[in-house]
Image (tube, rainbow, N blue to C red):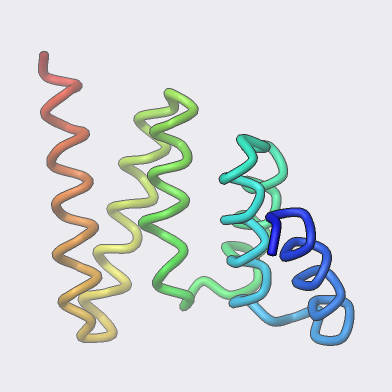
Length: 110
């Protein structure tokens, strides 16, 4: 299945379940694969506004901001995700977010 077909199917599913954060996340990832970063950002920010508890968002949103050379925004979202992960007891997410944040901060120091 091509990215285009997959994206079309995901968008149809989203029409049926417009509040489904997982579908929005999957659509954002498809847009990222196609280097359509503005569209990916739109879907990530929709999740951020409407479902702040969606822990998977923070790593990917931070990495997208890193790709867009918005390093301070990337650190902001990594940090928010770390705090959310701690509050939820999701130490796997905390570990991934901490690593991403530390790696990015090291590039800022150079």
